Image 1 (spheres, rainbow, N blue to C red):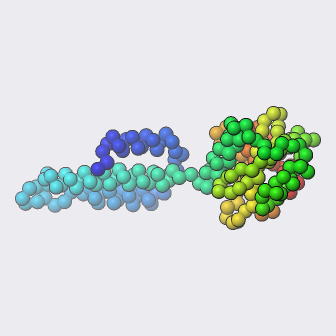
Image 2: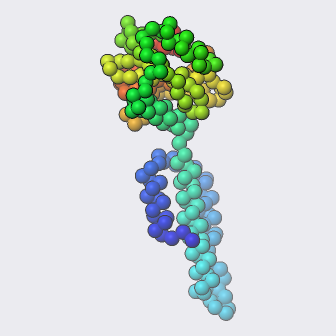
Length: 221
């Protein structure tokens, strides 16, 4: 049976660790009605009366079921959307590349060196351009694994700040994402083009990252 301590502890964890999504009114009303019906006292017994142990047991079970239902509803509506989950994964891959000092498998500012390097390792060819003249020099690339996809990661710089661009072919049009977001202090931009998904992530400001993304999109990315 769920006691008050367990319920309070679980509620505290949920409040601290997850984003809140409001449950639809009709679902809340349905659960409230079900709990009310379960908690309604039975007709008084001629032998023992309403205050029998059995009545208390049923009331306790109803309260426990209500607490459990509340927790389940909260958990259901705390599940982040696919865009948020993907943003978290992209940021994690970006941070991982910085922490292990493994930004590039191929370190080169020459797009004609980086692009052929990918060609021998992937079954797709990511667009590779150098934007040094616009202030976003190419510094290399690497292989990464994002969202169960083997991805190409192109690396650029902006005033010493790393910009990761993840690219992989779209297997399903429903998986295409287009958004601008901020996650854990990093700016992200997602777009899709020519059957490929792209994510750019960096700690440069949002306007600069948007400027960079437009350069990529203009050149076929």
